[in-house]
Image (spheres, one colour):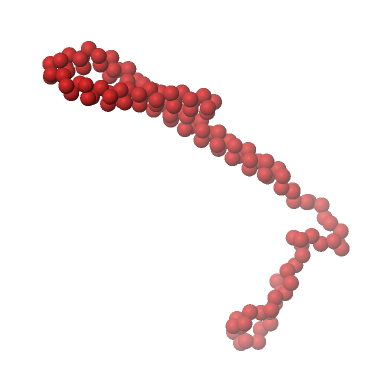
Length: 131
């Protein structure tokens, strides 16, 4: 869907840019015309430009917004899909109790560390208690 909307958007934006570029190319020869003839040429050749180009630019804008929305929607759904896959691959927490002799990494208590220097209790005689 996003590729189709993107193609339409690029096509419409290309048409709108082409019209603007054609006006730029016509500017040089039109400068050489006398004012009355310039006005006549503008009125005859560009009679339908306003309505057609206005609609074309509006369609280009709407298609670009639609392309952005579909692209963001696909990116968001891909992200949530990857997250669901990642969550499914993670091992589930075991609810069964393991035998008393075996210890897992999570159940192993950290070794008691020496008390850092410079940290003492109120009297300086308290011992380093285990949690």
